[in-house]
Image (tube, rainbow, N blue to C red):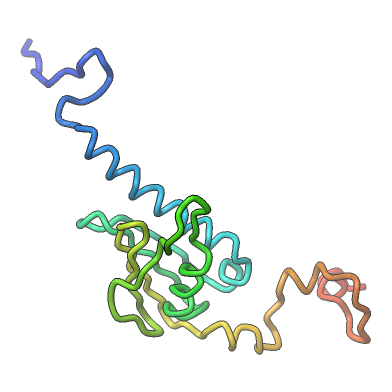
Length: 158
C-alpha cells in the first residue's frame, strides 16, 4: 500500500511560507471588513430595507458587497465614510477609490478595496416616503399618541 507524501506542518504551528507580512495584510483586510459590516449593521434602515445582502472576497483580495432594493450605492458609501472611524487615528479611514453612482461605488477602507453594488435600488428618500414601509423605530415609539392605529395593533388585530 502506497502512502501519499504531503508536506507536514511544522511543530511551531505556523506554515513555513506564511510570513509576518502576509498575516498582517490578511488581518488588516478582515479588520476593514469587520468595520464595514459593523457600520452597516448599526444602521437599522439599511438592514431593514435591503434584500439579499451578500458579500464575498474578490480574486484581488478586495471585498464585494451587494444588495437588492434599499439605498443607492453612493448613499451607502457616504454612510460608511461617516460611520467607519477610529478614535486613535485622526484622519478618515474611508476614501473614494473610483467613480460612484446609484448602482455602484468603489471605496478604499484602511487600504482595502471595497466594491459596493446596488441592484434595483430605490434610495433612502423613497424608503422613508413609502407609506407601506413599516419601520421598527416607529413601531417601538410609544411616547407619541396618534389617531391612527399602531403597527403592532394592526398585526395583532387590536
